[in-house]
Image (cartoon, rainbow, N blue to C red):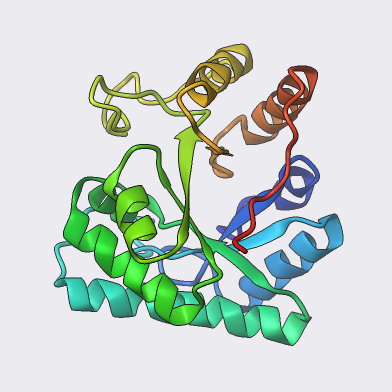
Length: 227
């Protein structure tokens, strides 16, 4: 959310958690405030979505940085959104890294540890959303955070459990029923949160279908919260 897409308000009615861009890969201070206001209106948990400082590539190109720089990059973005939440009378609930940073940290424990340390420094009560079974989860838990295993409804997977690269012609799921079927299948592996990209061409249709499909299966849709 907060990445300049037109359906943010409609999507808010379908979700329990929003990952809000923090002005580095997308967004701006004013868009962050508008998106936080939307989340408050719909009762949606607010999360920081920190990524590489790269508007041109939307944060989806890998950048090699020292772990100390990654920690500061993530911490500063969390703090920026915390400040918006404070002014709005809301609370930041979770952090979910964005794009290339997310994928790199999923496979690199050093980067995952840097992200976890940034979150812990900002607020140990924040929940970390990370790729199910990845280093983001193990390093988040090692840092004392509640780390929630995440699956993707609109992306395909490689046999090793990583996401299919966006450059592949089969990286995206385009059918709502297929997205729901994959979500239900992967939930059996222990996932606790489902990611849907707000910039997808059928994001709203997917969100509506997924929400109703999960409710029909008796799934309680709510945001996790650290104790």
